[in-house]
Length: 396
Ligand SMILES: O=c1[nH]cnc2c1ncn2[C@@H]1O[C@H](COP(=O)(O)OP(=O)(O)O)[C@@H](O)[C@H]1O
Ligand SMILES: [Ca+2]
Image 1 (cartoon, rainbow, N blue to C red):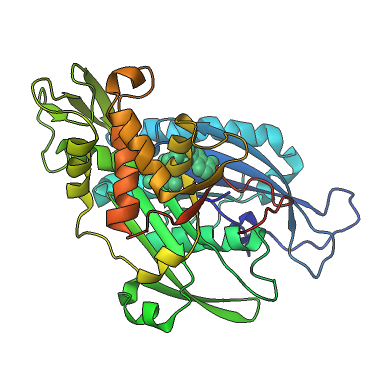
Image 2: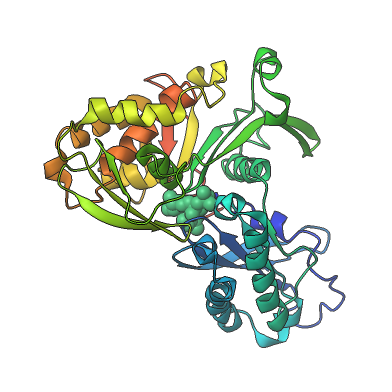
């Protein structure tokens, strides 16, 4: 799964050495991983089997559960935030045999929601979670609760997808790039094919690592504050302000007569449509473009590549029937634009879905075109996640 990739890697070095292979269950391991995203907290309980003592354990199964909102919504009630983690841990107690509790590692990786909080508030949340872990019967490794940095987030997603699609051990490697649109941040990651791309890339956008006897130099960057939900606030102009209570934020991307409220990162925002002014794609698009223009790096060669796109790219494409919920699908950048026009120019017809649908689709279009610099016809493979390591799919 993309936002918490390659389970084997998360737990590498965390399993205690196994000496006793007499017991029939001795070659089964468990690992508990929390993905603390800006919009929700998710638990993954992985089962690994070690078929052969010389090889690393293989993933055998996964149990998944999630809760909303994310930890960052508990910015001023860290104990309550940690309670949500405690609730999910109950599930782990049911899934993991009691005899293996004390050797089953538990880790939590937080992403952009916590990166955006003032440091002391984020640390208070993490330390409450650490206490919950310490009180649990599971193995708590050093540094088991932390904020993941943006480049690791991108790199791990890239490795997972390219490993699962077989690209990393194939003869003529054709790796795919990754786009991930979260609530609070967005990542772009790919393996540059031309030396020129690397020369034109800011140094902190390049991450090198070794795997399977090759050195990879990846282009990866996480844009904090450019996730879909953060972008809504930026578009509404609500980010700069210290949300004055009672203030109303209006946008031409919202239905004219709408007035509602919304909670994000522990703050309440009131928002509504442009009652008097314009609505529709044109004015909406220029609003969202302002959020993006000049703020992102445009690597030239991505216009000629194809990318996998996850998270909110997938959610919004499914919501508007651009792709199939189960299988995902291939889209061109222009499909998002076409759908944005259709929704924004018929706001009254789409009121049953989220009132933000027009803003979200316009933002996705602007992010791809004006942000990253994709061409109208760049192909995107839009997927929910790569759930099952045994199903590989063709990379075109
Ligand atoms: O378990 C999961 N695997 C992959 N994506 C997920 C999972 N749970 C939620 N998502 C997707 O992640 C997006 C929300 O982003 P998230 O809450 O992770 O924010 P962040 O990455 O900015 O911290 C949504 O599109 C949601 O569908
Ligand atoms: Ca995420």
